[in-house]
Image 1 (cartoon, rainbow, N blue to C red):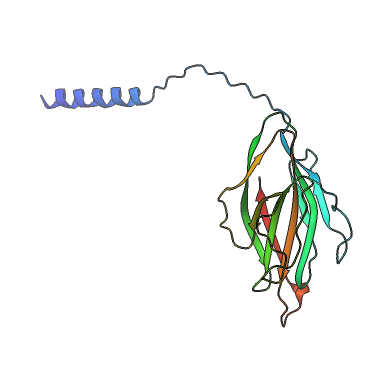
Image 2: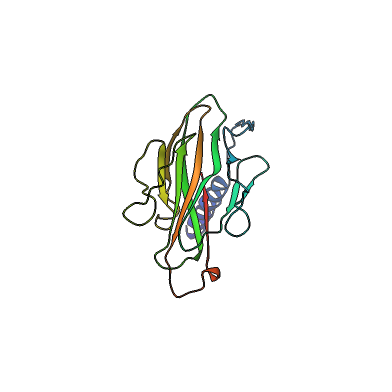
Length: 194
């Protein structure tokens, strides 16, 4: 009887092991057809123009789906107008979001870096606000203002809806307070994507 129970147990274990090792595959077809990107970067009217030290460096990727920008601000307020563009080349409107992936390096305490999105051809109001630098409150043509020194990383921030054939102009405002430090020793990089 004991041999019979052992044989039945072994048979059941072998059957269970075989059943667990059998997989069924059903056919599925996936076709991947890449298309040209509908939303792209382009150089703005002040790209690669003279800066306080060198030039406002704007490098647009080979397929216009990446941009690298280097600016050289100084103490107090430095404003960079129409540095790069975001263009919708499609016949459909798109929701555009910005995600700040990472911030490396640092700027002096109290510094602020703003990315300002304007509709194409918008007039800028660069009058001094209460804080001592241009008032970034809602004015005609402002799509959104992003304080790059304050947002949480890896959280999508909705910029807005870019209409078909539309263009946004990207400006930067940098405020660095005076202090007892060598400004040249500071550098900060904001890695983001749209």
